[in-house]
Amino acid sequence: MSFWSALFGGRGAAKAEKVSDPVEYKGYLIRAAPYKNNGHYQTAGIIAREIAGVRKEHRFIRADAYASYDDAVNFTLNKARQIVDLQGDRIFEER
Image (cartoon, rainbow, N blue to C red; front, side, top):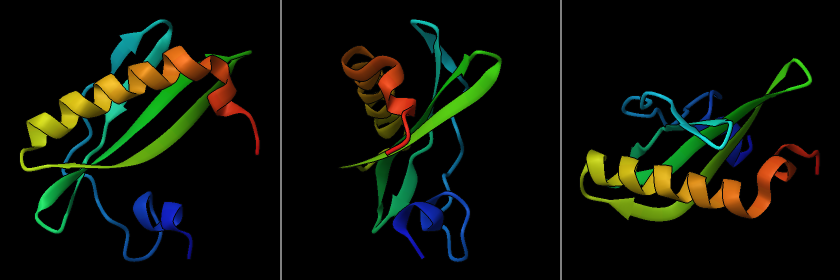
């Protein structure tokens, strides 16, 4: 099983404590979804946008971890903004 399926829905999936309310940024909706990992909250989130009538999502995980949920949410939202600024719609391209 891949790491992504383990995190986002496969058997034994790591579950986000709770997904944050969406934050709009430059036409994208960003949600933080940190999850508990070894006593810390792992940076993870979702960037979404509707393109040509189709909702696209990009899920990301970073190595950064925080002791508090709120710190993880704040960092995740900032990281998502950085991803949008650097990559824009390219994040939705098939690899």
